[in-house]
Length: 533
Image (cartoon, rainbow, N blue to C red; front, side, top):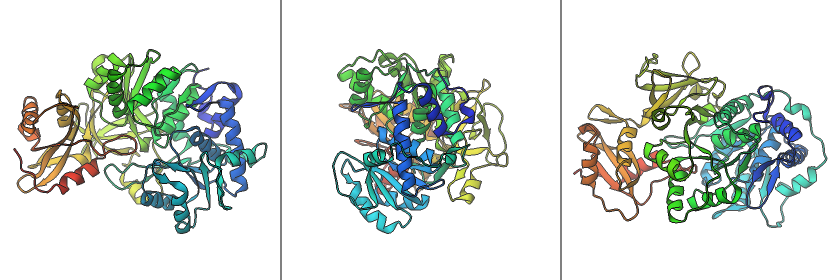
């Protein structure tokens, strides 16, 4: 059946109902515990929606989803959608203060959470939070234990059982809503903001991404470890729904675990951030699995170097495509294609998906000609309505033609392919000369002793800012800071050579596997004065 016909006129809730009616027995969600079909997800979401309705949750209310990548996240998402309420997906690895800020800011009336995850007891956490957040009325927990709760705390399975066969206001799902989800940015380079996205915002990029990968009912998708992230919601859950593909759910960035899922369930399409693929290459080299079922992959979320693409295609899957994804644009803005020339597939993020427009602007907002480096600006059906409850902040991110100013630096070549250089706010001004971290990092990553590298600016009395290269060496490698500087000097101009080199056991990361640059910069600044070689 492929991409469902007529999806442009449907809401997200209606899209699930349509797929469940046409393919009720087809697998949708797969994990190590069970397989849920489209029909089962639809019936569970209907039952949960009915129970949430009888608790008083209605259209427009905000409901937080604080869960790892599990079927309950997906069922909860569709249940909330059926009521016309708004989902607020949050990273379950946030700290208590972050949960408190986002729940208060979104004015969430309920939260669906795990009972516990890693070392965090969510029941204890919410016992404290619910006294501080008057809007937060209900907690729905997912877990195995038969615990006693008060009249504001319910178990997920109990609500599904209680709601089976009951009705709720169906008119709440008619037509498209202005707000389907509030997604909080990860805060890698600043304070988190709530990105408001509609049904159509998410459905369009999800459909175009699925089409670009030729997803069909026979595909099984693996590698989405953060369903709370825009890529997990869009191309992950909704892309699988629209195409009829099954989604294999996992909960860890460890390469061994994902490889096991590929082998066990016969995955055919692999999504992921670069970190996942790097770890899988290491794990595959140490203990090979049968990954022959994989036909293609898609990497997004962080800069991708050519060496990684070549290694993945040589050792894991025949074809790795690259996407440029933004939370504010509902995931995919651009992506490469299997038909692209090899140099375009390896060195660009492809061309804009259907319906998305990309331009490059200068410091005064003027549109720049082809091959010029400036700030990437995008416009199209995936672009957000705005930052939730922040109209002034929203206005500062759009130009007069309603192009979203992304903060990413890059260019569009004469064939329409988009090249990324770095982040505008990450520019290091060294002695009045702009240095973009991406170009230095690309050179660092080509060194055989470098596993992971990131470049940040640090205060310097003489230069204003100095270039600090933070490196995680390959296990067992022996390398010096002078060797790194000499390596960079072969291809980089003098003003781009790192002034200082720091060797670390690991770089700080966000919950989605991105390098947490603001934290890395803080760490390097706290080191104090570093003597340059």
